[in-house]
Image 1: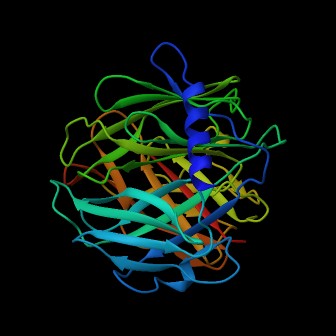
Image 2: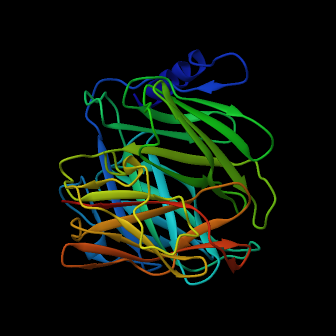
Length: 362
């Protein structure tokens, strides 16, 4: 059965190829949004990571971690094994490090995501990180909400989802550059949040959002990827677009989630990024961003603080800059503080734009 399903999926992908150099993914079947999901903050190389920062759609079990080669981790999510899906990871480090996904796949009832972390320059890094996995299918009936993702394996769309049931497409450009088209998820102004993660099991790779434009017909997003230093790189990647949905694709629950686009990183703040649809908070408070030093941004998500929770960060803009989390975010009362998002050019902190996505389990 698994073999037949794999063959059928491949046939759908081939039939969805479009002219002009674009590669398209098949629309989703009718089911729930999301089907399965899980997140964790991985603060150990072996065993059970912090239970206060892990949650998922499983009914029993806990997230566990096993070590691989230096800088490599195998994260096992219990009882949410799924074909396809999407994974994102963000390093939590006080130095210029990042984490990337190597691969993911179901193992029995579980889902295993292999993660690899590096320092700038390419040496392995033993670091903490935040991770999320989700798989969705079916359509959303809401006009204001939208959710979509693409996994580009280096040559084609290996898995994807579009809540309008539109067919996502990827247009390869110059080396290390792709344009992603998410039809049916459009907006008249900038709205929503984007997360991008490199996927490569053979070499250091990091990816970001290079540019973003929108129209009522869909979202157009440029993905840029670089090697261990500053050179453009052909690699795999994952991209998720969320609008009024959590990074997992879920909604109500959670009723406590938020995202923001720090699009004026020179603003000392605190300021509320605009337009308002890029600075979403459910139940409706106002997120703020302010400087905590060169390259450091303190992000405050009020009225949504609750454990377990998760934060993901992606850099925005041209060039090889990248962003991670300086430390584990904190939750005090009903407010979550991301202290801080830090962005780098090589190993030097610099003020750069970034997307930040937060979700709790509630």
